[in-house]
View 1 (cartoon, helix red, strand yellow):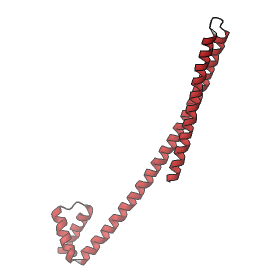
View 2 (tube, rainbow, N blue to C red; view 1 turned 60 degrees about the horizontal axis):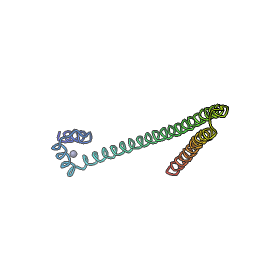
View 3 (cartoon, rainbow, N blue to C red; view 1 turned 180 degrees about the horizontal axis):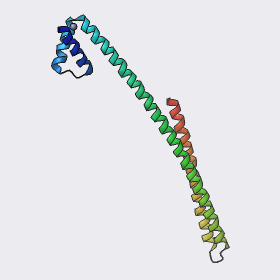
View 4 (cartoon, rainbow, N blue to C red; view 1 turned 45 degrees about the vertical axis):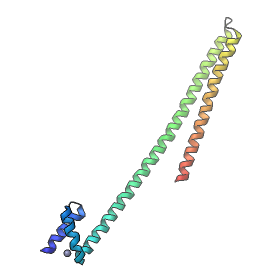
Length: 149
Ligand SMILES: [Zn+2]
């Protein structure tokens, strides 16, 4: 009868639903009762095993989230590059059209023609430079992550 009571307390303690009084009562009992102590130890080991498994699963999940985010960033990087290339093509085309019109127009002064050409050329060079920078950042980013893993 008495042992049944402590077995019941053991389950409550293991499940974490025992009151402070019940837990104290049980812990006092296992100091003198080897059988309950051994059983409690087994439950503790099981609990540790369970939590270590949970931790492992969590790590797996975290790794999956990490790879997904890395893939997303690479994808975003590629999107950014395509967007930049498209912008350069459109700007280049626009610039060509402007230059064609400016050059064909006899009312536009030579200095204005040169100024417009220089500004458009500068914009395109800046865009190309930014793309190069982004590519280098991506490459470095990927490298540093690979080293960490
Ligand atoms: Zn006992």
